[in-house]
Image 1: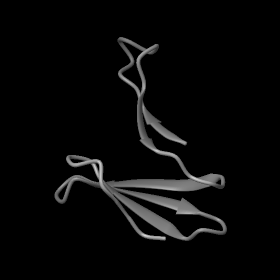
Image 2 (image 1 turned 180 degrees about the vertical axis):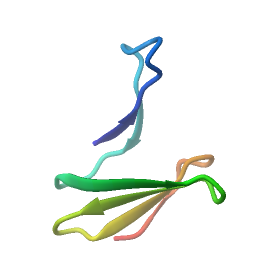
Image 3 (image 1 turned 135 degrees about the vertical axis):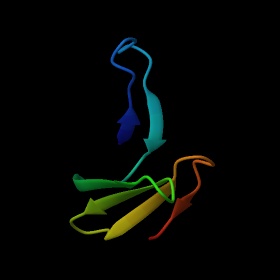
Length: 57
């Protein structure tokens, strides 16, 4: 899982992605508002942070 937290309210996380395997890398492209998620077996997933839409495998 990839969850976003506001440190001032740590009990209220926002689920960004539910993935089948371990996450090994995260990268945010602030210009395009995209989150890239790298996994060992499933490749790279891309989340549009505005619409919460997932692209990739």
